[in-house]
Length: 114
Ligand code: 5GP
Ligand code: ZN
Image 1 (cartoon, rainbow, N blue to C red):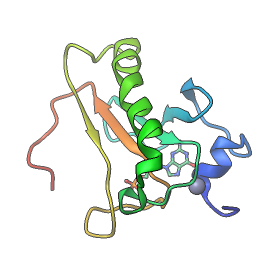
Image 2 (tube, helix red, strand yellow):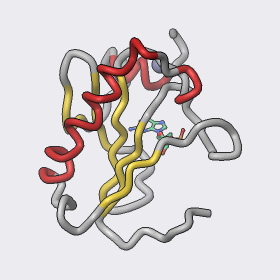
Image 3 (cartoon, rainbow, N blue to C red):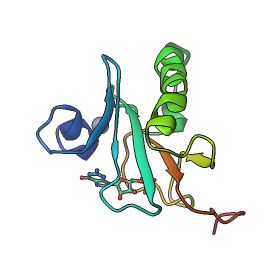
Image 4 (cartoon, rainbow, N blue to C red):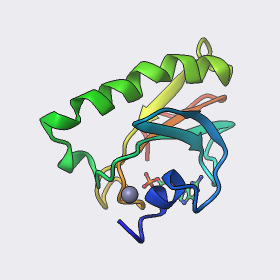
């Protein structure tokens, strides 16, 4: 997926501030943080969006959620609260077509979102 910016981050062709990495997932600070804590967690495999998730992707999706408690603890928002968001498609404002979960925290987050 040569022109995918997140694949290039996975390949370390583009630098990022990594907070967690293992064989199948990567978590790093969003370059344009919308909250004091704003992390993106991605599968290393190029999956364009939630629409493309298949049963064989269950392990990596579960792994993403299994590391969130440790990531939010390390970032100091485990108890204050945080939000996990995956935008899918244009109405949701998805701008990078590589599945990613935003983790936002460090301030009161409005609800419902705009
Ligand atoms: P989306 O709008 O698709 O839900 O989220 C994409 C996110 O990726 C945005 O919050 C944007 O700031 C972030 N982003 C885009 N390009 C880069 C980049 O090169 N590095 C990092 N760390 N984040 C990026
Ligand atoms: Zn990609």
